[in-house]
Length: 198
Image (cartoon, rainbow, N blue to C red; front, top):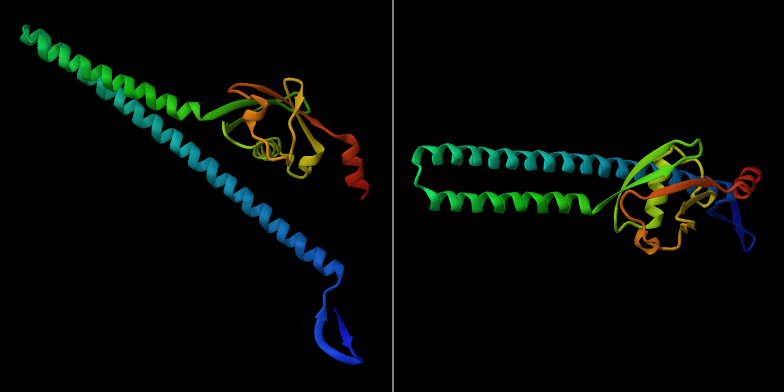
């Protein structure tokens, strides 16, 4: 680092040259990317745990309903004249079953399952929240296809003959992307050449 002279006198202030500044920025960028990758892994782990726990709980409720229904049938055979309690229990079972359906719908309806046709023809499955941004989708696809080394500006994602715009603040709903939609992944060759030669 060079020392700056002020009014002919040596100053103790160090001057940071451009390569040092660029190196500091690159280090920060790597740390930020590592942190974002860790955040994504943590979020994916949380969502998997959440889905497994929710499905287990729903399965337990289903078993509970089946047990109640089985004991109800046995009781009805033994008692014979308990029509009113049978109706009450049937109503309770119907309520529990409708709650199960609502819970499953709540868990499943907020997430979209998208099919992404990759560069070598392989189809990748990406799960993403229906209110997510296009930038988040680009990031998930880059991670899923192991293309994190390629800048998002060099990637094209096509849905229903429309190209999704990166870094424009748009949402999946702006493109009317729905559950089980198929997206195509392409590379911009001219943009890749300019980044390689630069």
